[in-house]
Length: 77
Image 1 (tube, helix red, strand yellow):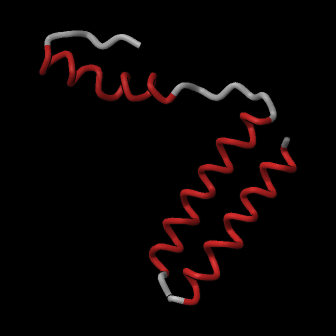
Image 2: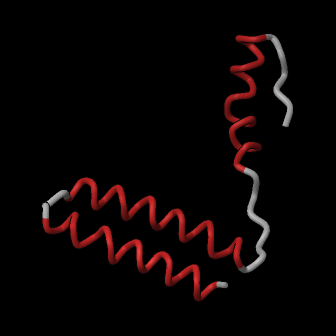
């Protein structure tokens, strides 16, 4: 499964990157690289069976107090 996932990412990179470089879309290439790195960083541990933290808990921790003041309701996960 891991090898298939890596081959899929390499195929996407091989398809997209040469066109971006040829057209000199450097900002798009940077954005593509960042999102691709995030996708790989999240999907490989998941494929290996690792438990990743829920990002919703972080958002509730950050925006919970604001939500409570504006809406008057404490957010629940």
